[in-house]
Length: 437
Image (cartoon, rainbow, N blue to C red; front, side, top):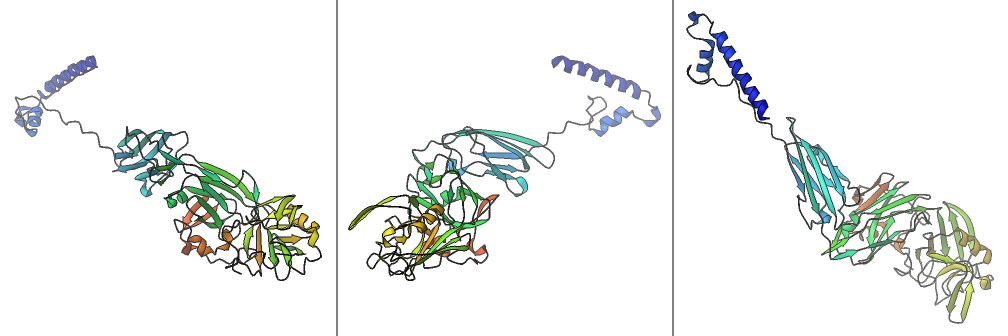
């Protein structure tokens, strides 16, 4: 480079000499040469050194780009994610590498900012590169490399639903956490749902370690549901962070709804909104009344060993709907009373043929509504989410908001913004106060 500059200097000197020689031929009548006029205009005397015609302009300053966490940070809080801002320009590109998974994010209006969509992984290293451009075309590129903290306490999450399994239209999404959750709203907001048919619902905390999602009305039949819990890096309490992302996909099958009356001694079975069967039953006798309420089928087994006062037997075609042991089941011994009298110990007795038919239809989450009983249903004796009205259910959410899901994902919305609910119980939703005798 020094050789090139030297050559340039020689060339410049030769150019100046050439210009001087040319101006020497200017007519004397002007009283001065062009070189003298130039010197005077620039504030120098004719005998001083020649000044350049102009000085180089400084390069225009680019936008000020800020990345948080900053470069070299250790122990960054993963729950805060990544924030990028551009003062005096707009962001053209933000790229994040590291962490073992892609980091999604979104720009603010006007692209003056960017923030990651979810928390970052705990104990992970990341590199962020951001490029911004000013109105004058100047560009700034900045990079930040940092590491998130490794927490002393973590929580894990389990989901009840099995991969690509089929459930009934009343089935709640049931999450269980390994540790008590304090920041419940942060956990709710870390969850997204994608549904093949539009669904409106809400989250409900049953204590500090169980979180359920229930639609406002029963799920549309034949809906595919994709669940993602972005729990990695979510701060759920003092020093307590999630450390994994939980995903699951399951299906909602046919609408199979049982409606039983303990006073008429009948049960109706509706399939996809149409009455298919109307069977005689015998429910709980006085003192052992089958409790009122909108329940869900929990499990089924053929047979189930049932033990109680005066009996110990294997019972065929048994579908359970309370944790305390109430079933729809084959009761070949009470066929003569079915349709006329309540003689069971709390179960709904069916004929062998009817019990087999229902058993083969049932999957977990099929609604069963019991009415006419002198006994009220008990909360948490089974999956009792449908004991609650929609307004009651909303009060169990830490955010107080509804969730609207479709094929593109889900979002939280104000319940007041929802259209009026036109669903009717017991076939489309549960009746208000259904558990009260």
